[in-house]
Length: 188
Image (tube, rainbow, N blue to C red; front, side, top):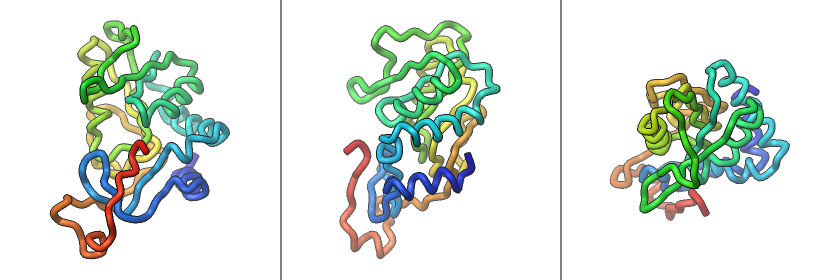
């Protein structure tokens, strides 16, 4: 799957929003990728998952792990496409944790799969959990890399869409964004 094909899916499903948005990172942006809108149609999930799985298939992983909520659908589909085990981390008291009896074996090779990455905070948190349990992060995959590859996670990293989407500190907003009320669509 090409980046243009993936981007077209986001446009057709209304998952690429335009306006004034507050991102999970606290930064502001004119664009927002609401992956849940693109990932509500299983044929599209299958296409996007296959595109990402094809990029990550040679990394020797046995498990896919994703941060909840955003990474769940695409992470599970990548695992299905690669015929791997799927687990996830979720928030507990504001931090991601491994729960529900999921285990990571020593030296187990895992792929971290997320929907959208801007600064990589949740991916890094997930990687830290894998490493704290003795696992090895073989690679990271994401549907949308909003940093256009500038986030360095120290492992092979793959995306279907890599864009340099402008972001702004809340106290340094351009004039046009100052005139538009900000929304925080994240997990709505």
